[in-house]
Length: 484
Image 1: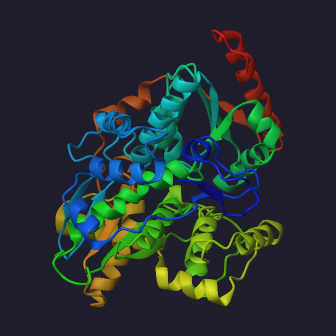
Image 2: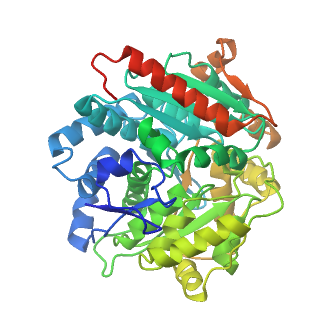
């Protein structure tokens, strides 16, 4: 299996190359050169698998036994999921009024990012141990990615991780999950800017190909193909748990509502759909509605500013994984994708070509949900089920309630729940409800914290480069037989 850049100007790489790259050298994102097609028989065979079982099958299709033999792959994935609190790893809650909530948050940091990052970290360690190499991971976060990435690699001997978090834009708990990890290989920066602004110095560093190569830099943001790959399993699990019967021909559809910010989960859903899984996708966003406008009108343009909302991890204006979706739906047209993305980067405004827009509207529908609708959905779900939704999960549930109240759509629907309500007590209180916070999260309040401030006006790119160079020097000093 080979991976090519969405912009078509980088040489193909294998899974290991894509894993260690982040952005492709031409600024694009890696995608599989071709997608395996799953027939009805395969889907029926997969329908009885556990969530880890589905991850194993999907990873085997996209990694290849010459890179990670199947037995090793199974072991890595079992190890990745060994710290999850739920025996199923993910869990479907069937609630009143047809509301199916797929809980993706039973990992260490109570967010869906744990699912893909714990696997990705295992793949990383596997290759690093084989190659006796060191990498520096650079991550920008709007809340959950940073803590999940830190948890997945903290204490690893051949990985340093640098996390940039937006000061004042994460929940208090999200920030504490990052700043209380005092391991030597964890380096956290609190940036005086929003999550789109802190992505800029990261992108600037990654476009310096020689610098990236010299320091073995990689990213664990959802630009990383490995994360998208693991997240495809959500859709298969949701489908098999919600489909009324697999005896019908053709197989009946299931609608999956995806609360989304950077569109990584949505891209995973589009790939699963292209491989033959009969799902209808709904991209559900908060007031930061660039994905909604793109689906509805073909208008992929920035708004004046990022709106702070209760669903703070989705307060994003540049959903970079839309590039993967454009490439996929354009029939792998890298020339067009490159032209579109270069125009967007230059002008921050783009109208999709009519043909691409109509393909996008066929693959995905969308909705934008206000803070008021978020708190209403949280309140209603509690009243009907005594079940607390996090504000991001409530974005999906709000769509469900609107459509069921209008008797729209009779097909089964599954709402993805990306985080536990325990991480967002402020939003739970805003909905007039009482937060339920587990002991290990309460304990964060009393832990020592460590992070460095990046002030507005500082040269963030230079600070990042200096930090990376310093870590490389330190590794070279420590490495037993390093000639890197």
